[in-house]
Length: 196
Image (cartoon, rainbow, N blue to C red; front, side, top):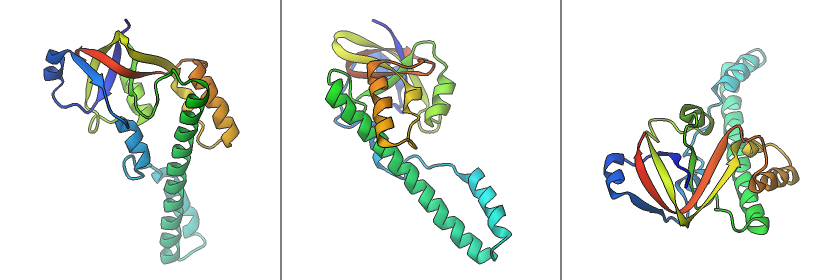
């Protein structure tokens, strides 16, 4: 079976490779938990805030400007959180309805094809080395795991109307897209080959 790279927060990857066989076994993945927690992946809106601050300073007093900026910042963060959750729930709903045999984004382990640009993947999904410092090469166990490769660029749809998000979800679960940024979803048993 094909091997994949997994960016992980697992501490002692050398010790894990000695065990060799592991199982993805959570009801809710770390990824999904982070989506449910609005404070887990803070949105960097500082460039927008700097422009807004400059614009408001022309028409408001400093106190009014600060208060308005904080309100706008909270609204933007709230919108980002809500739109991200809506997208994930929509993708899961489409999977259950049309592609129930595919691994669930809610429960799976995410990986990328062996040889992929790990730093590009880290940057795209906010997987900083402080949070996810290790990368391991894994191999799903044939017959004991469910693996699906999807185009992660189809996930860039948070600002679209729900019907268009559903269309993106159908394309994602169908395996369509350019696959210029493939992500691998794995449920079940896998072998840890080595640290990368």
